[in-house]
Length: 430
Image (cartoon, rainbow, N blue to C red; front, side, top):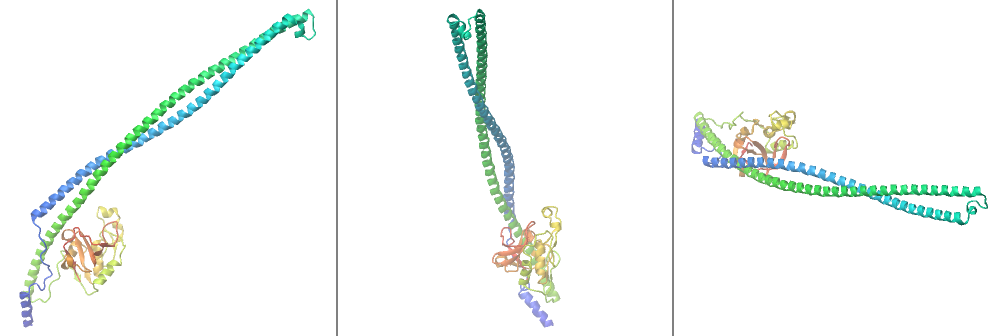
């Protein structure tokens, strides 16, 4: 037994890295580099804020101009309706004026005909009274009484003719007056039509100017939106750079801590003659490892729940569970009353099938196993994002693909690996 302990101690002394689970030191960016990166991100954020303010103002002005265009369009519609009404009135007035003119002309001809007939009757009567006597008045009568009656008859006929002529003249005057009124109405209708026509042209011109202003403002808003989108992209890249540097710094600090613990554990093992290294620290509840399946079991368990909804705080060793409230985005999607997985909950369930029981926090899961350079990641390794791996975790499937529970409103899915903000090391448990 003593000889075996001596061999173990010698091995640990000559090859101190044999029992280590700590990878080579990751990059350790300097404070100046991180500070410069943060300043760039702050500048981009300030620029996004400025463009957001400008865009808000531009969109408000665009809305005002849009409302103005709608108002001008309605005014143009009103002007066109008024023009149609004036045109109809002018058509009716012209028709009435034409009819009144025709009636006046006919009345004038009737007056002239009546006057001619009366003149002809008077002339014939006078002629008959001087040459034909009573023969013309009473066929065959020669008495003085008949002659007197004839004279009275002529007087009566003359009065009746004059009355008839007066009636025709009055009718002609009425027709002339009607014709005059109709033509005055036509002139007024034509005048109103001209005014309405000008109003319609003016309304169309004003509408076109409003639409031109609206299009110009829309182009301006679109340009600002384009600048905002571009700067937002730059901000995202800047934030990713900051997160990457801070992640590297956090990883380096963690490496230092792990290295110190490794050295302490090695010294303690050498002193006590321990034969096995301690379980790797997780920063939370220690990982419990029991006999179980391998990588394919882990992958199969994760893949079995493709399409299961994301639920923040959801998932445990037995499967999906109801999520919990976060007071924000998750609540807005109803995660707290929906059964599903979040990212670390999916990893808990997947690895439980292989006898590895992880805590429900990606930052702890990141430190649960051996760190492997990202370029050497293999199927079944866990990939992490954010400082200390505390933002997100997914299961690597190989070939640049992964399975994950991404975010509220989504579901468990297979997706290409996203390298923006990813930690430089994968974690291997099996």
